[in-house]
Image (cartoon, rainbow, N blue to C red):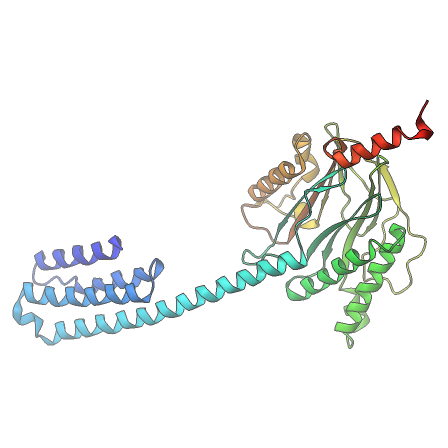
Length: 373
């Protein structure tokens, strides 16, 4: 409040001391005009009233007859009217700020329901996730990830819905809901992918019953499904048009391209059969990075893509959360602070030594009668 009050005082003093042909009183409107940036309508009205009073003081101290002149009366009236208009706009601005706060609150609640954060620990695995929507005001978009425990391991999903807005969020919620339900019932990754395919096709048919076939083909979801066992140092995956995960193993970064990449979910009219499950070593202290194309397709000011595989080699010794923190900071520096697409990443590290339950299970297994002797 010192800023508008100081302006009123300074303009009043200078106008009084200035030569008679110089009139600075109209500048008093600046004080109530800047007040809404940091105050509400009541304080804005108070500053406006002080500005009007200062205009009257100027008329009295410069020349008492000037106060009653037509010119000065018009200046006072114009200042009062403009101050009232600013108060009205300040009230409207405050109302919009409250509405925006409510929208953000709903957006955050939607994110917690549709895209809950992954647990930090899942059996012998340490997990971390990061999400950055292209829209600064949004908390969620078309990227998705989920993880759940199965009988003797964990299943994970990361995906990217084509498009943005509410349609993308709706498609993402369908995929994640289907995954959480089917991950426990499906005996294999192939069965799980078939179930996800059926869910998204049914969803698209219900919400676009009159769409042409070409339009339906434009709505799809790239997805990567993983199965990581507690006991075996192996991970299995099926990729449906999704960018390959990166494996960090002893300072080395390897892109895990599938032997046979399936088309994205929602693009197959024919049943998916003979799905190829790719297996790769996933040993203790290895880290697996899953990500969406919003990261690798992010461009700098000179048009170059973000070199994810090259950058993460320097952070190979970092834990999952530290790794994602480095990626997020480096990515935003690369693009200059603004992404053009949603971006999501999940880091998974096998650390069985930090899992007392896993260690106890191994002790019981090794001390059983079958292993005695």
